[in-house]
Image 1 (tube, rainbow over the protein chains, first blue to last red):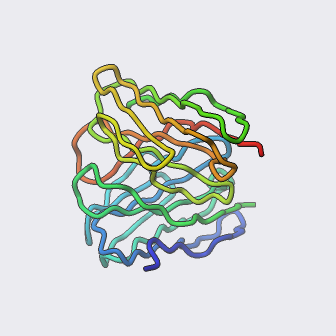
Image 2 (cartoon, each protein chain N blue to C red):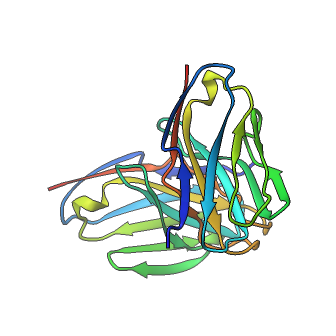
Length: 114
Length: 111
């Protein structure tokens, strides 16, 4: 059981480039989300999804797009990368739409924007 | 939005020592979880504990929802306990796990 899988693990971009961070889970979880972690800080919610075809914004959504075409996958798109988006990105999932399910995290993607 | 404060920010322990980490939050919560981020960056869910007390091996947690705080106890600490401990909460009973994280407590256990 792979759990939550994120790719790539590391990425360097130039300002203005676009890219997609991939996230997949094999636990049949309905809820998926993306967080960013900046140095010395806790995690902040970017976007989340409560099921296929349903997404919504979190605390810091600007500069990021998401879609959820399948239960398993929840990619995060950076349309025009900026240095302020240099961070570690974590994808997370939990079983049901209801609050209170344990949240499981992927291993993270370290992104640098030059 | 809800504020989450963790204390202390840093903690250095000798192996075998016990410790208590605290999480204060500014409003009523329906969802509170503790996480451990190991030195390699992996985040592991330790507890889902919006109220009451739970134990898992050497770790235990207590949340007093009416007084808006939660405590994480580490007993007989080991070097593998090193890392950052995060408390995360959700204020309302909403769909999903839209957690707000505290700033974390960085723990170093020395052999």
